Image 1 (cartoon, rainbow, N blue to C red):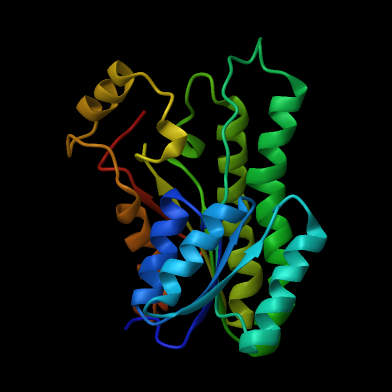
Image 2 (image 1 turned 60 degrees about the vertical axis):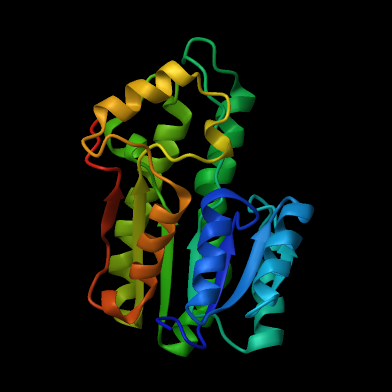
Length: 245
């Protein structure tokens, strides 16, 4: 029970990595706030948690500052504190740069970068007043190495890495650790439209000869959220099987 009685808000917790993380955190003793823009998926995750643990669903569009504030407000009303924030929500809108629309660029930036900022700002005063907290941000190997057709996504994930390092230095003195996880290609719904030949190519480029499963990333989140990682701050943990793009 590595997170016994901890209170965790997880964005994008209705599916994929976020769902796996929410269920894992619950099994490890956390009270989990399932935040997602898709109500059905979020309710299903929360319902699964309630079978053996404690948690609830709150609808959240991370691009809306007032909704991020509301999630924190409801969490405090129910549990009195927030120990962990996992900024997992993210999207892709892939296109070559000469064909990318302004809408595609803006949407990815708003969710993947501004959304992270919104959620952090919503929770940071609470964590400062507590004198402790853990913030974990979803970066990506694409934010480190880049990738063709993902200039918007790569830019946001590189931005998340910079934000993580800056806030880790700013908030560490307040007892708040800020870290990021940089997954490799992971078998979630986001990969559903990737041709099999591309997936196979990525498997072959990965020394472990497979793509990540959501649980691989969830366990990295768990480690960084736990007291075992109490001296880890401003770090970017790559969980990519040794892949370099």
